[in-house]
Image 1: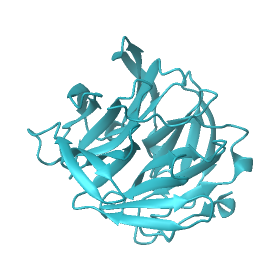
Image 2 (image 1 turned 120 degrees about the vertical axis):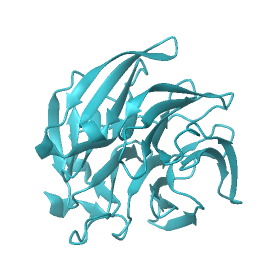
Image 3 (image 1 turned 90 degrees about the horizontal axis):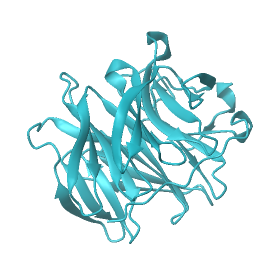
Length: 288
């Protein structure tokens, strides 16, 4: 029931997204993409911290040698928070100046897989990119209307990736480091909302946020719906496991175009009793 959901931030984030559990820093990082902000929620004491960016920020991923890689509207960046330093790496879509990076995760080879989208969402110009450890990048697949996700199977033999604009979640096999054999994993009917951010649990289930659907759902590895958890905001954007035992689940939401949704733009935590014993996987770090 939604009344059991725990509020971990004030509402109002225009586009809460980009969840990352950091064991190193003991916090959940999450962004407000349209607010150009990165937030941290520290699990030990519930304190918070915010950093402001000159551009829309979609995500941060920890770097093995320290700091982060960040995805902004203008591409990939090296990031230090203390002190605050941004250094541009590359813009993977110079031919699409209206595009921005949207969501990303690192794989077990230390590479980052990131989607993009057209900011006004009026053309299908998004794609799935990969940032390699030598800081080169390639376009893996496209076009997408709103490239979202991604997430990996526990053995990193598969990558799941979404086109939220088409309500489709795809799965690829990863063979010799490359994504091949793209196929449909699940299609969301209209009354589910649209598939948004995703994560994988240690048991192989895929957890998907429902934009416009007020819930997150767990799917089995064969694409069957296992169960859903209702949330008190309509536009649910991302989900991740956190904590030392990876037995806590956090969820972001968006307030954009939701003037009557009092909970919109809140960071939520789902109570452990609703997780049915599922635990998460430690996020991979960028190794470049």
